[in-house]
Image (tube, rainbow, N blue to C red; front, side, top):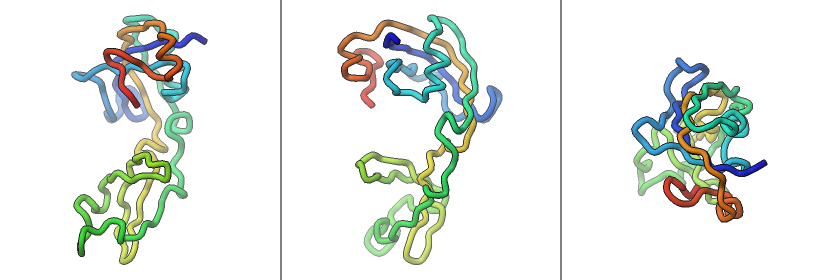
Length: 164
C-alpha cells in the first residue's frame, strides 16, 4: 500500500447526496490527507484512494462505519460546580448548546448540554454525527506520492498540510 497525499473538495450531507448539508469545502481550502495511516474514516479513504485527479466521487457511509452508533454510555452526569462562574452558570451552558469538554487524555470533545439539574449537568458526548448515515460528494484535486518525512510523521507537510 503506497502512501499518497490526496487533496479533494467535498460536500458532506446527511443520508443521501440530496440530504441536509453538514459541511463543505466550497470557498475554503480543500481537504488534504495522507492515505494509509488511518487519518480518515476507513470507508472514506477506501472510496477515494484509487481515484485520479479531476475524478468525481459520490458515496454513502452507514453510521456504524462512520462515527458509530449513538451510545447511552456517552450520556454523562457532571457536577454542576464544574460549570459555575462564581455563583451562576458559565456562559454558554444552556440546554441544547454544544460546549467543548476535555476528556481524560486532554483532548477536546464536543459535548451537548442535555439538561441542567439541581446539582449536576447532563451532557451528551456522542460525536455529533453518531448514528448518522453520511454521504460524500466531491472531486479529487491533487494526488502525489507522500514523502518519506510525511510517512514517518504520519501527516502532510507543506502547503495545505494541517497539523492535526
